[in-house]
Length: 483
Ligand SMILES: *[C@@H]1O[C@H](CO)[C@@H](O)[C@H](O)[C@H]1NC(C)=O
Ligand SMILES: *[C@@H]1O[C@H](CO)[C@@H](O)[C@H](O)[C@H]1NC(C)=O
Ligand SMILES: *[C@@H]1O[C@H](CO)[C@@H](O)[C@H](O)[C@H]1NC(C)=O
Ligand SMILES: *[C@@H]1O[C@H](CO)[C@@H](O)[C@H](O)[C@H]1NC(C)=O
Ligand SMILES: *[C@@H]1O[C@H](CO)[C@@H](O)[C@H](O)[C@H]1NC(C)=O
Ligand SMILES: *[C@@H]1O[C@H](CO)[C@@H](O)[C@H](O)[C@H]1NC(C)=O
Ligand SMILES: *[C@@H]1O[C@H](CO)[C@@H](O)[C@H](O)[C@H]1NC(C)=O
Image 1 (cartoon, helix red, strand yellow):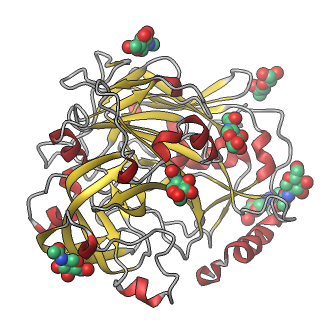
Image 2: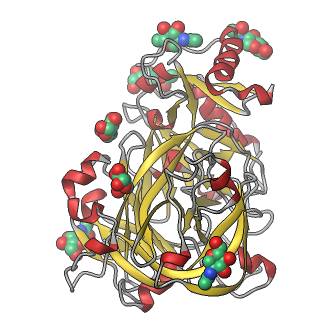
């Protein structure tokens, strides 16, 4: 958050009243976002219902927030960004939840009042969205001007939440075919990004996300642009997987072609080779990374994490951050390296607490037949362009905490994304109900011995600490409900 204020003070401003005159040649909308950890009883990560059945972790998650304005004059609202859903909705002061919270409800996120906006338009139909984690919002639709990154986008349709579980709205920026009303058999309406293109604010429906180190306060989204200062080398363009029953892609699913673990000394072992290629969903709405059970188990073992049944996921001594080495994710034309330490996520916010030895290990097992999910523990190491027009992802290795900036416009047409190359054999596995490779449990894929990842890390969590871990988890996160 701080660094944005220093780097680009102009764009931090959110009011349309301070709408900037942008360089006419640059059709890029730059939106910094902040990250916040929330506990399980607050808003959770969102995934539209019916997407991928994820094991849901009731732990602390990172949410990404962007400041926007709605209406004329602008009303300040912060929304939580979600690439995995496609509806925008905002809170209103007279919603059940905002009224209930005794005056301070919805204060943090802000609310929208259509009666004081001269650009508010009535839209017929009821709004309703349900997320996989049980969160929901329902109300009415509206259209108004949405101010984002210092730019006003007119006639943006969104929901006004009248009932629901969350005090803060969502900025869903996935495919329009993912809009909640489409699941009721209705046609999608033009989403925010389509409106940006229609109003010639950007050239094509594409945006890039720099999640950055999760410990860094900020990241950025560029609608219609990339920032070559934020990744190494060039980007690899990978086509999205289509669902066999649909004519076009509706999810950011690409093919993961291999997985290798490397120690700090360059010794490596293949965990998954190309014969086991699988579709994998890139999802900022998921905190962790979900790999086939046998692979996840090998990694869990390898770092000495302990699977705590009550918590449904692995916990690890934070001292394991001393482990060197990386997990290398291979895609057509590129490899994204994720440091092993970057899978180790703090379980508590208090750095000096005695029990700050407890971390989560951000890799979980996923059942066969499900599309794998590459969540934040993977995505922060990647610079990702979500190119909806071309149904492709362009991906490169991120540069953590980069302060260098070189924003380049994304054009239109097949090679719209600059600095991106599509390798000739970049194909994608269509997604079916049995999308995950049938070889998931083949003996050859099993661990063949103790991997040589690092000799720098020493301590392992012994069985004896499992009880301790559980009780720590319980006390730290109040997960009593699970026990
Ligand atoms: C959003 O606005 C708040 C209040 O003005 C400010 O503190 C915060 O830094 C802004 N966040 C971003 C990501 O610009
Ligand atoms: C304004 O929002 C309310 C809900 O808060 C809704 O009932 C009403 O129809 C909206 N008015 C217009 C003009 O959209
Ligand atoms: C990035 O910055 C954050 C916040 O200052 C820091 O905690 C983190 O260690 C940095 N990451 C790297 C890879 O330097
Ligand atoms: C990326 O694009 C810039 C400007 O278009 C160009 O100068 C640079 O050489 C490109 N870099 C790579 C690695 O393709
Ligand atoms: C592990 O790596 C170290 C250093 O690279 C090497 O000396 C050692 O022989 C390796 N051990 C095994 C079992 O491969
Ligand atoms: C965690 O690691 C630290 C440092 O190696 C060690 O002192 C501590 O005993 C470990 N805690 C547990 C529960 O294993
Ligand atoms: C840990 O527990 C497993 C199964 O509960 C047992 O087989 C193993 O011997 C235990 N290891 C230690 C070091 O106690």
